Image 1 (tube, rainbow, N blue to C red):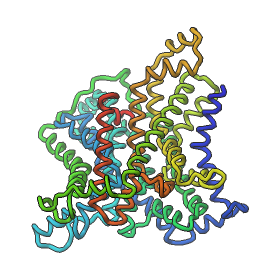
Image 2: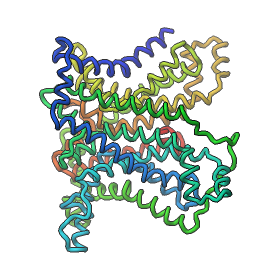
Image 3: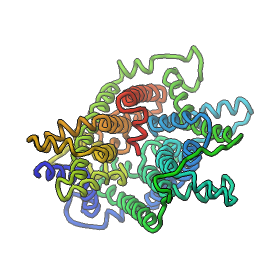
Image 4: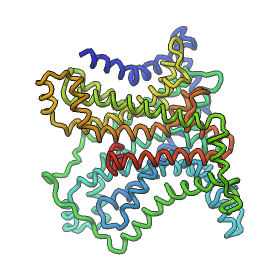
Length: 552
C-alpha cells in the first residue's frame, strides 16, 4: 500500500501540482504577498497580448484544416482503396514523425524564403520575374509548415478507425444507388467521425502550444502568437505570474474542447452493427488510383523529402545559397560542431542523458500505474490512470510554466538544472509510456502472476520478475518513443533550460536566431542521425511499426 501511495504522490507532484501552482501564481502578487487580479489585467491589458492569443487560435484552426486536407485522403487511400505504393504513405508518416517541427521550419526557410529560398531562386531563373513564387514568412506559410508535421496524428487515428469499418455498409449504399464519393462522404467518413474530431482537437492543442516554427518563422514575419508571447514574459525580468495568467485561457480552451468532444460523442452512436466485423474489401478506383497515388507522393515530397534534402545540402555547404557544386562542398560545419563549438557536444550529451532518464522514469511509473489499474491493487488505481494521461491534453508549454512556478523558486531552486528538465520531460511524455504499458497489460493474463504470489513472491517482486519481462517488447517500444520525442522537445525545454543544461533543440533555436543555417543544418543532421539509429533499433527489437503503434 505504501508503494501505491508513494506513486500517487509522485503523480501529484509531476502532474497535478504544476497546474495547481500555475493557477495560484496567476492570482498572487509578485513575491507572494497576497491575491490580486492585476496579473490578468497585465496579461490582457495590451492589444498586442490579446492579438497573440487570437492569432494562436486562428493559426491552430488553419493547421487543423490543412492537416485534415493532407491526412484524410491518405488514410482513406491506405485503408480502403487499391491504390498502389501504400508503403510510400507509411514512409511519409514515419518521416514526418522523425523530422522535428523546428527543423522542418528551417528547411522551408531554405526552400521558400522570399529572397534566397531555393524554390524562388529557381522560379526567378526560369521566368525572369522578381516576385517570389512562395513565401514561408506569411500566416499561411507558417500554418502549412506546422500542418505538414502534424497531419500524421490525424492519419493514424482515422486510419485505425477506417480499418474497423466493414465493407457491408458501403456495399449497401452502392446497391441503393450511391456512387463512390457519395458513399465515402455519407457512410465511411461519418463512421470514423469520432476519430476525426478527437485527432483534430489534439492537433489544434498542439498547434496552439507549439514554440519552434512560430518562433523561427513567425517572429521574423511579425506574427505574434501565444507561445512566443509567453517566451517574451520570460525575458528579463521574468514575469512568471503574468505568464501564468496569460496561460489560463489556453488551459480553459483545452478543457472546453475535450469536454465538448466527449459530450458530442456521448449523444450519438458511431458503431457499425456488423457483429465481429464483416469482410473489408479494397475499393477499386481504376485510373483514379494513380491520381490518388500522385497526391500521396506530393504530400510526402513537401512534408519530408524536400525539407530533409535541403537541410542535408545546407549541412555540407560553405554557403547554402550557392546551391549544389563541388566548390561549395565542405565538412567544416560538422568539424566545427564536434571539435570547436563551445557547447555543441555538451548539448548532445545533455539531450541523450535527459531523454534516457525521462524515458526510464516514465516507463517505470507507467508500468506501476497500469498494473495497479488492471489488477485493482488499490481503490484509487483508476484515478492514477487518469492522472497519468492528463498531460496528454495539457499543452506542453503550460506544463513547462507550471514546472517553473513549482521548482524554480527557493527552497528547491531547480531552474536550469538537469533535474527540472528530466522531471518536465517525464511528465510531458508520461501518457505515451502509459498508453503502451496499459495496452500491453490489458493483453496479459494474470495467472502467471497469481502463481508467483502463491509461491511466496511479493507484489513488487512479481512485477519485476514476471510482469515486466513479459511486457518487455511493448515497454521497450514505449521507452524508445519517449526517448525519441524527448530528444526533439523544444516547447518545454526553452522555458526551463539553463546555460549549463542546453539541449540540442535549444541550441538549434539559438543557431537559427544567429542566422547560421549551415551549422544549424549540420547539428540537425546529427540529431536526425541519432533519431534514425534509434528508429532502426526500435524496428529490430520492438517491431517495424513500433512508433506508429505507440503513437496511437
